[in-house]
Length: 196
Image 1 (tube, rainbow, N blue to C red):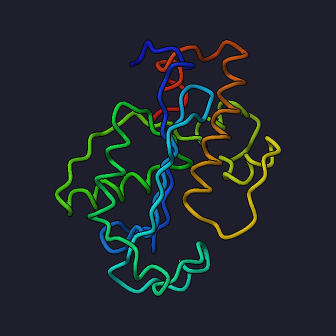
Image 2: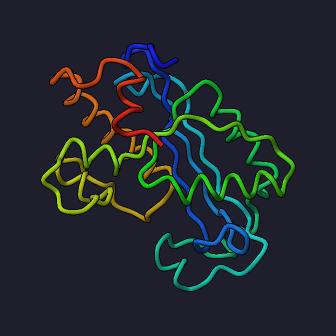
C-alpha cells in the first residue's frame, strides 16, 4: 500500500457523534463512513446509523448534535452497528478531522463488544491542513476549512454523515493542491505528512 499512487488509493472518511469525550463512560450515538478512491467519491454507498444509547444523553451533548434519547429509541444497538462499520475499514486509509477521540471510542467499544478491530493508517485533516496552510496559527476546525475552500455546510442539524462527507471533500481539495505542487504522489508521501 505505501507505494500505491494517490489516485488509486482507497479512503474512508469517518465521523461519529458521542454523548461525551470519555469512551469508558460515554457512548457513540451516530456513526458514518464515506468511501472514496483517489480524488473522487464514487459509486460505493456511504454507511450511516444512529445508535440507541444505554444511558441518558447529557444536555450539553444534545446542544451539539440535536439527538435526543426518544429519537434514538428505535435505533440499533452499537453491537449491531460496529461490525458493519469495521468491515468498511478493510484495505482503506481512514480520513477524519481530529480522529483521536473517534478512534479511541471505536477501540474501547470494540473491545467491550468482543469485535476485532484492525488498526488502519489514518489521515488527520487538521494535521494535513497545518502542512497545506503553514501560516495558520492553530489547527483549523472543519468549518474553517470549509470556508477556506468555499464549501458550504448543508442547512439542518449537525450530524455524522454530513461531517464525514465534508471531511472527504476538504481532504480531496487539500490533496489536489499537494499533488499539483508535486509534494504527494504516493500513499507513503501522504502518510508521512498527515498520517497518524
